[in-house]
Length: 118
Picture (cartoon, rainbow, N blue to C red):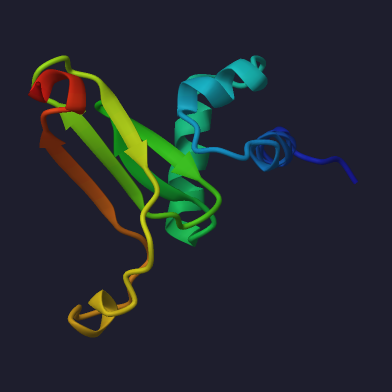
């Protein structure tokens, strides 16, 4: 029995993703599996997202992928433009107000960092 190329590519991509412990971009994944084209990688990531095995977040105008549903928060300073990634706590009360099941939360906060606020 011969394994099709697409199945081999899926296996290669699945193994590569398992090595990421932080959110990653499609471009970062492409660096790990250089023999697989970026279009194939994007199709695979889209399929995995639809299956629920990957979660997506927006960060600096890029899509990040993660194996875990983690809440994601940015604080961007109006003055210097620096961006901080902030870990968020629980949102258990929020799910009671939603018309569906809560997966994760993404918040973009803006303001002035301590240095620029002086």
